[in-house]
Length: 414
Image 1: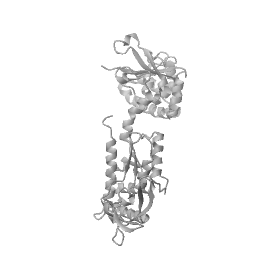
Image 2: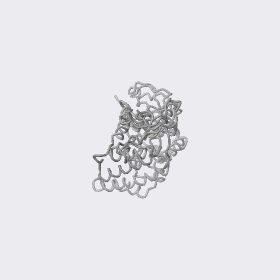
Image 3: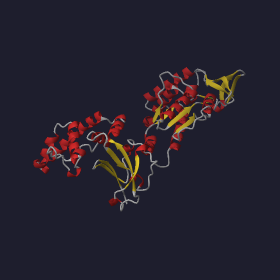
Image 4: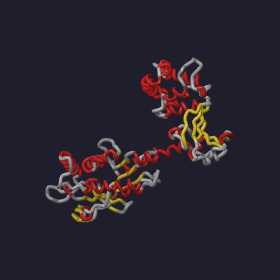
């Protein structure tokens, strides 16, 4: 068995939904608008709960809230003009079939009508909506026709126009009982939280994930690499746009992540950090419980980095630099990392980071490595695919790390 959710304005049932409520309408009400009230005696046979959960707000309050949501009078006026033109075109197309005597008076009454005139007609019809026509001026336009002009647009714009026909103190009532198939919804029900929950799944798993890197260089390199290796994913990943030229750091990435969480960004968000000591230290310092759709990952383990040339106070040495010196440049491929001398560009040891008990390593000649990578991208793009002698294994490993992080974030159901 199903139940009907209704939004009522005076005696008019302006909107109705079967077994649910249009979730966008829930954004218009707060928990302070929730009222539990007895049902009409004739409804008791149809509903197991003798009390209805109703959201009640005045027309004036709803007008204010709609305005602040960007659904104000101007938006309603624009939509009304377009919808009226389409409605008249459709009515005129029906003239040969239905006859001028039935449709032409309505067409004449609506031709050139502006939103203010529509509001006047609705205001006249509202005292007796069951009569179906705005009779006070002898208008042939039915209330049903006036409402159906809006049928293909955001219903909240129609609501914004409807409240213009009301006294600001008039109540608008939305029965939300059917949201739980007639089960009890108590006075603690929060409409806005319910609407947010309804849309969060679609937003999180329908919009591109936002990837925060340590700076603009990482974001630019990964964006270029994606165009070469995974062009079919370009619109499914969005790299955070740092200020042009901002090199950034692990700590700046962490600060950006915290600001996203504080702002309530609903996209899936991944903080993608280097595979080095500074990044591990910055992550250690993050003392914050993140939303479940936020993740922090590091650039992945590289086999190449297990025996990599380094320079330090004791001279050159080959060692595992995973977790110590894994910046984005380490993942650009052996063809980029190998110099004209045929040797890999070495890692130079920098400062000791006490928080993680390890030295921070950095690849030498980073600018040159980045330039080589850009040339590599240009060659691949001009050939419309990666060249056989190009090494993209490091980039592929990063994209796979993102794939795993994002796919594991996907909830089991809506």
